[in-house]
Each structure stands twice: as C-alpha cells, then as structure tokens.
Image 1 (spheres, rainbow, N blue to C red):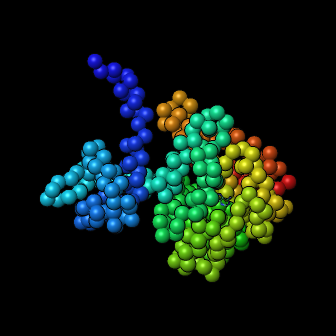
Image 2 (cartoon, rainbow, N blue to C red):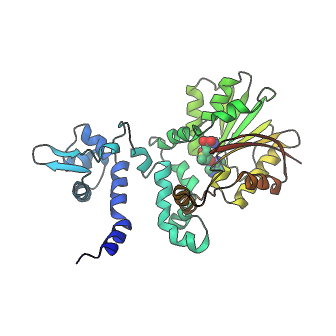
Image 3 (cartoon, rainbow, N blue to C red):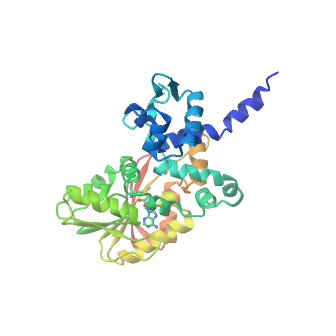
Length: 335
Ligand SMILES: C[S@@+](CC[C@H](N)C(=O)[O-])C[C@H]1O[C@@H](n2cnc3c(N)ncnc32)[C@H](O)[C@@H]1O
C-alpha cells in the first residue's frame, strides 16, 4: 500500500529535480536545442560540459517531461520546459540560472541548518564566502547580474527620481548603486547633476559600461569600493537604494554610519529601502522571510525599525517621503 504522506513529503524534499533544472538553465540547454543543437555530444560541446554526465542530466530531464528525445529529432524542449528559453515571454532562465542574482542566492539554502541553528546567513555558511563578493566575481560575459539589478529598480525606483527635491543637489553618490541605472536616470532628469556609483568591482564595471553607453560619462563615474569601508566624502547626497534590506541591523548601522561620516554636517543620506512592510500570516511573506534570511540575509523591516537604525547610526531624520508597499524614502543628516 502506498504511504502517501511519506511519498508526498519525500517529493516535497527532493533536491535533484530543482538542481537539475537549474543546471539546465545555467547551461542554456533549452536555447541551444531551439537553435538546432539536438545531440548529447553537440550540447556537451556547445556548453563545455562533460559529455557522459550531461547525457545523464538530459535523460533525467526527459524523464521529468522538461525535454524529450527521439531517434529522428534528438533532444527538444517540451511545452513544460519552454520557459527555460531566454527569449520565451514567460522566461525563467535568468531567475533560475546559478550565476544569476536569485539563483546564486538560493544556492545558499544548503546552509539552512546552520542558519536556523545560529541565525547566520546561509550563503556564507554553505560556501564560506560573502554573497555580494561572489556576485561581484561573476564573469562580465555572464552579464546576468547587471541586467537583474535593473529589474530590481523597477520596484518603485522612480519614487527616488521624482519625489525627492534634487534641484539644490550638485553631486550625488549612489552607494551600492549596482549597474548605474538610478544614477543615469537622475542625471537625465537633472542636467546639472554630477554623480558617482560606488560598488564592488564587478558591478562597478557594469556601471561604468552603462554610464558610457548612456552618454553621461562627462558627469557620472563608477568608483570601486565597499560601503563597509570609509566612503569618499564631498557629495551632497548619499543614496542607499535597496541596500539596508540586504543586511543585518549591525551591518546596516555600520553602512549608515559610513554614509553619515562621508556626508559630514552639510550632506544628506537618502535611504530608499525595500522589503519594508510584511504580514507574518501571509504565506508569501512567510516564504520570503525564511528565504531571505537563509540566503543573503535580507531582513524584512517596518518603517519604524528603519528609522531606529538611522538613529542608532547617529543620524537625524530630516525628511520623510512617500512610502509604497515596496519602498520608502527617508532623508537623514549627521548630527
Ligand atoms: C540589491 S542591490 C541594489 C542595487 C541598486 N542600489 C538598486 O537600487 O537596485 C545591492 C547592491 O549592493 C552592492 N554591494 C553589496 N555589498 C557591497 C559592498 N560591501 N560595498 C559596495 N556595494 C556593495 C551589490 O553589488 C549590489 O549592486
């Protein structure tokens, strides 16, 4: 007789299927098949994979209905596997790719036991390295990270450009500014504004490239550095967009302090944080809470908690902008 609970639980706990799908996404197998590479040997050559092992992966994914195989046509993508193609309208390839922002973070979940025992981030427990350092080290030609940070900004990023009074600001630093999307938008909306992105090497390279392409290199630059170290002074406003939400209270206070020190008495720190409001009863919030804790970690904070972080970093709240469900704007200055 089938023990359905045990079977259901075992199926829920399966690690092989998700990892096999993610390997397929990372190697872009569906795109290669769609482009006409349909033999195991051809796919191994195209992806640089070990031929015999890739064949095992393909066979397994055929058994899961993601690919199919026939003597005449070789390997093909099924309807179920179609979103693994980059160009599919509902593509999940980048999201599942092991060198993409989310895919990389989720690998940290293998350290979940350590996280639950200690409260420490899963990614570091699993790999012994800092998540963002690994993000920075992803080769430029993978380029997925630079693209993903843009989509992150779409979550109410326009609030920063349009709700804050930039008219009196000459120089802005986007601290942890990613690929430069926000700085470029700010420079376009404010023709006299000059600015810089400060980020880890990989992302700073992506920002420099975008700044060049956007033809604002005469007013904008990308600086390599860490916001956990002293930050270059001399800017009027230091923006922290979607940064504190990735850090524990202790680190968030340190980052705010670094910005406050750089801003000095006359400068401002503009916090534009994400993941603000949550409801513990909601299944989505429950998932996000554990997922984010187990990966980056990214605590979910209330507006009140965010203000308390500012106060703990010795900053005074000088302006409170609009808050949406996904983002809030708070301006601080050093005491
Ligand atoms: C969630 S992204 C936010 C990017 C951008 N500010 C936005 O609003 O979309 C976090 C950014 O912080 C950067 N970062 C992480 N650790 C850093 C560090 N120690 N110093 C500087 N930047 C860092 C990452 O490279 C990434 O670009």
